[in-house]
Length: 393
Image (cartoon, rainbow, N blue to C red):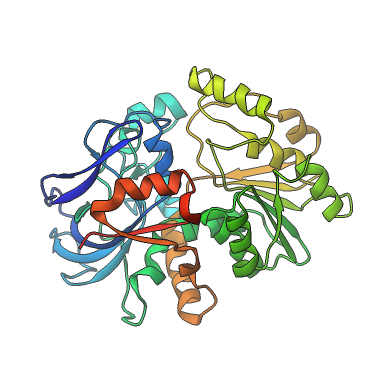
């Protein structure tokens, strides 16, 4: 079968690889009908996530048709149409019982490696390095899905296109969880760093959860325009002002946003060349693994006693973390890889009711053979690219 494979940093190839096989009784084989490129895939492309190996198949946003099942999977049948969540979860451990699926204690076979870097391991993740298990991803024609009796969501409504439901695999629940962690109350003002797909869905979700105002911060006019037109958010282009925190104070009567969402993560950009160069150089020298500009700003901009919600991906260690602001100003930080399983059904219901239409973020559609080109366009923000959807067939 064809699959998009990581070869080395900034080099991908679509190659012919062996088709996956059933390895455990709770496995399923899914013929992929639609997949996508995620912003967090760029961290793999750029080499900032450790434990990538030549030939690893990328992709953690995918859906398709069940073509084979292990004998332990009783809730699905061959021919079912399913969306597959990016965390792999057993459904029975302490984390899964408490609906913290991205922390599953049984799905990461390389737990020892993750434990050395993170303190404790996370769940397995499709197509996201050997740190998270080394599982083959979904930018391919077929994928093996472990614990298929727990993960895949069956889509029974034939009126819903793949594009309507594909993002239930990751970015829609991630944006929603980012907003949910803000504990939004009527009248709240929410500021969001990053107008990429997760930031767009976080903005839409914040309004769904009762926010009065949402302010999205980015530097690309087309992304800010999309947020304004599709979610109703106010926008700040940080390259057109001198100080984001002061702008937010002016917009909130001097008080600051009630909660701030970091939807950027480890490869953030800063408009000040000296500041950007400092962290870029430290990252290049591996003296820090992540560039935390958005996180620093979110902490310093949040009102006293507010919440900072972090759903942008971080891989390791950062420099100049403003812990003094967190402690002295009674800030709460909430974060996590999304517990996707928890949100799939409720968000599917919102899509079916017309409360959400995730397709507004799709700007590019390509074949699987064009995946490396899609990564290049997406990474470099060419052709006003927001989201690339791929078709294997």
